[in-house]
Image (cartoon, rainbow, N blue to C red):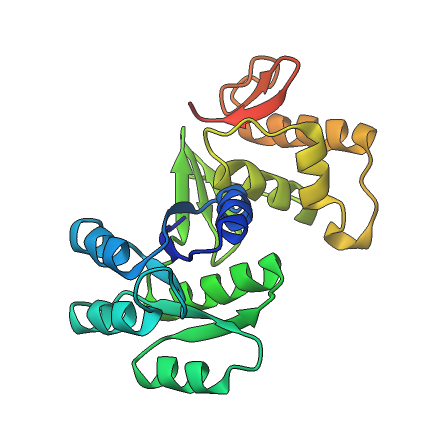
Length: 223
C-alpha cells in the first residue's frame, strides 16, 4: 500500500507498531534517532513519515524541517499527551497531522490513510493474477469482467491483498473480519466465505492460484 518510515526510540512501540502496520499492508522501516532518520530519507523514497518529537539523538523537529525542505513527503507527529507546544510547533513546520500517545493503532492507521489520500500517495488500485481491486470505488474485476462481492467477501479479499506474501492464520483472518456487517463470524463461517470468494475469483476454485492454502498454517496470496 505505502512505504513508511517510523522514527521512534521506544523499542516496544517500534516492535508493536511495525508488526501491526505490516498486517495492515504497509511496508515500514524504523530508526531511533535524528541522524539515522536523515540518512534514511536521503537514500530511500518514503510515502509517509511517522515522527516522534523526542529522540535518542536529536529531535523530530529537525527531521521534519529537512523532509519538508527537500520534498512533499507527508509527516505525522507522535506527541506526548497534552504537549500543546510540540503539536503547534510541528504543524507550523508543515507536519500534516499529529496523534497523541498513547494512541490506538487503528486510529493511527485511519490517520495515515487520510493523510496519504490527501497527498495523493495512497495506492487506489491493487492488481494480481488478472484480478483488479479499485479501493476508491470498492470495485473488483477479473480479466476486465466485474465481480460482485458481499461486504464480508470484499473485506476478506482486501485483508489477503494488503498482506500479499504473508501467511495468514485462520485466527488472524477471524480477527480482521469478525465485526463486518455487525455479525459474528466463526470458524465454519470463515470456511464458507473463503469458498465463496474462491468460486468468484479463481479460474479453477478446486485448484486456486490466488488464495492458496498453506497446509497447517493458513492461507496466502502471492509468493
